[in-house]
Image (cartoon, rainbow, N blue to C red):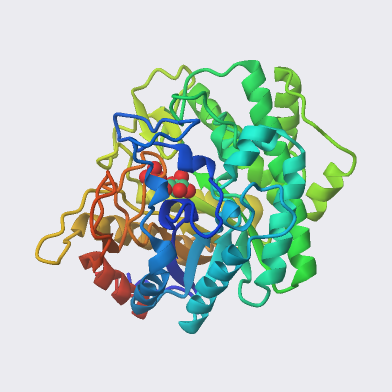
Length: 482
Ligand code: BG6
């Protein structure tokens, strides 16, 4: 079947400031908490250091030097034919501690220049306001999003962004993968591990930790709803979306108990946040869960009203893999994007163990569109793989293959299922520091960056085979996937 996408479909790529920009302490920027993370690997977790050590390499300090090379990078995106580029704001580049009232002019100027560069090529920026770049100071001194005052600091950031970049940016996402907190991971809420401990811990949680995560989440949901309203007030042209870590989980078997366990997992880990952000209130299953588990949220007068009035204009999500869930949790474990589930015997996995499942993307799109009936953008999708640069070339047929199948799945969701999918920003369009492992060698990009896991290299850019392939896809509006 010939694959064609609707006219005006947004094609592009996605990055985050903390994985890309580098220049972590330049021009008045403060530290993010991710600036305190070491590099790791599939086997060794990234470790959090309270005090930075001179003999340790912290990969986010260098990123891929986007701060100095953004003009070259955006020109390469334009050469591929991007019409949308997703990037995030480095919060402490604008507010070094996060609680200041006036922004750092050099930070403001930097993003003006980035957006001007996008405009030059007719690329719409899609801006994530917070993608793990929260100022370290806010984690240290306020305990992260557990503290209600973060809502106001975040809104101060939002007001600055919406006013300053009015007319230059129309598409916004409030929090990257906001549902990470609902799964019990503290770091998306700026709740730091102990000094010397891994970033991610999938072990059991104490009731106090669970309570903290849901309170941090509640504050983010209120902040998100207020941000949506503010964005619309400042510029009615603004469109604001939620951003959910999307995973199409299947029951491990057709036993009703497994199907039910899978449904419960999807409700609490995946749908809870978007149910609030799209529909404007906590769903009944979440309220019951809080009550039954003794979780008490910091409800303040007006919160319910804010959630109701601050619903998003579109739904966005990341999609890399699917997993399986059983009632007894007895299947072999497998890693995914910030998740541990059970292994699907019918699917193969990437070098990092993430299950590859293009049909799962179509399945997920149908689930979400059926539930919310609002426009959708896939804002992350891609394959982390090792690439080899030889004679100025990178041959990456595995990446082309992965992307081809996922783009075909999106097409089918639109053409055969009627899903209102309006855009696709492939993740890590230029190689960048892996969020989960801190490696450079887990590469996603169409553009190779000459840097290794220890930060050595020229940082020069090289077009991979997939660069030319994606260019062809975009020129044909998705019709030519060969
Ligand atoms: C998502 C994040 O979780 O997955 C990105 O939004 C991250 O920041 C991406 O990079 C891929 O994960 P990883 O661990 O392969 O970099």
